[in-house]
Image (tube, rainbow, N blue to C red; front, side):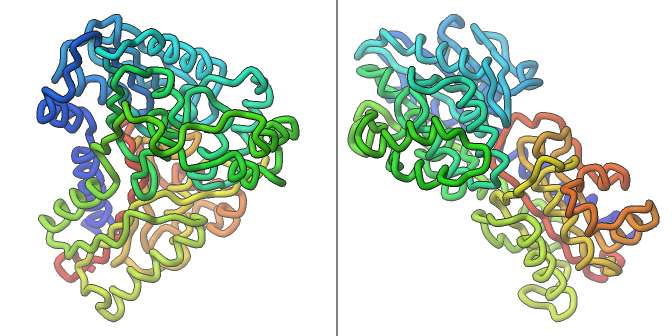
Amino acid sequence: MAPEDTLRADAEAAFRAALAAADPGPRVTEWLRDNGEAARPRGRLAVIAIGKAACAMAAGALAARNPDPGDVLVITKDGHAGQCPSGVGLVVETGHPTPDQRSLAAGEEALQRVRGLGPDDELLLLVSGGASALADALPAEVSEDDWFAANAALVEGGLPIQAINAVRKHCSRLKGGRLAEAAGPARVTALLLSDVIGDDPAVIGSGPAAPDPATYAQAVAVTRGLPGFPATLHRYLEQGAAGGQPETPKPGALPHAGNVVVGSNRLALEAAGAALAGRGYRPWLMTARLQGEAREVARALAAVALESHHSGRPAPPPAAFLWGGETTVAVGAEAGQGGRNQELALAMADDLADCPAVGALCAGTDGTDGPTDAAGGWVDGSTRARAEAAGRAVAVTLAAHDSGALLKQLGDRLVTGPTGTNVMDLAVVLVAGPAQGA
């Protein structure tokens, strides 16, 4: 087997191990069983799961508890509903990464279900990545057209998720603790699968059950001068900053609500490292806080691997460098096919050219990378030469944000389908030693 093929097989095995560790179903079940008395209400139990991993999280809840099916609502991404277990009263699919009218209908359904809960009742809220787009409910002052345009501008602007969610929370009756506020006086237990840097409950899914430290003023700062952001909605945020709209609940304002992170990127990285150690690599968990422009981050990842290959620092081969987090890509109207992971991978191709000892797999744990059906992509020392043989230049492809099309042509995309989890992205960068045939 060629060195590149061995590296790729090892990287994909590590990614599968990461996905297994990030499966939220068993983690939800385990937490509920370990906290059985604390989680059992005297009255009614309402279950709402929102996100790309909503079906798996709902399955975990059903394995530990026995709610009335009519009290179970699952809101998830298109194509994910088939993963849901029986015992769910209502499953709805909505738009992601760009929300749609179904997202608004789903948000209104969630609010309707929590209204009327009493002090003996409980809302079990299961939140995973994608929840911000998948469900929302608008204030009367915010039009649907402005809301759709605003979300498109936020996603296309290459902004970090914290900035995007600060805006979304202040244009919502659901986010920023407002769903928990509406559920009071019932107890609210929110179990969270983190898809954000730092695992902050106020950021995960825009924090529907978490106090919100962000303000209207911060939302105004994010949207000022943002291309495509509606001026009318910007004025609404400015009115809020001037005290003309009620703020989101602040720390201390939701004593009946608790938030618990049951799965994260770091757990996935640790599992990937263990899998690679079993294959003879020295695993180095570099960070679970990777962020920045994908093409710029790529140069740093490639540099670490090449340094290991040439000098044995910071680790001698065979070495595995593991990075987790979420990069960004600012795209224009003429963008081609691809997402941040495929672009992150392809942007290493020139630096890794003619070095068969190094390969990199970059992929999203949810199984999707931007508006594509791929989780991510693979590159190695042969990628640039194979691209040129196919009549494609790596630099030109990157400039057009068309990484997905090239990697598909080369057979180097990773396609998993929906994974049932979402703990951001992983980059597995491997440096072969003599045992791998380099």
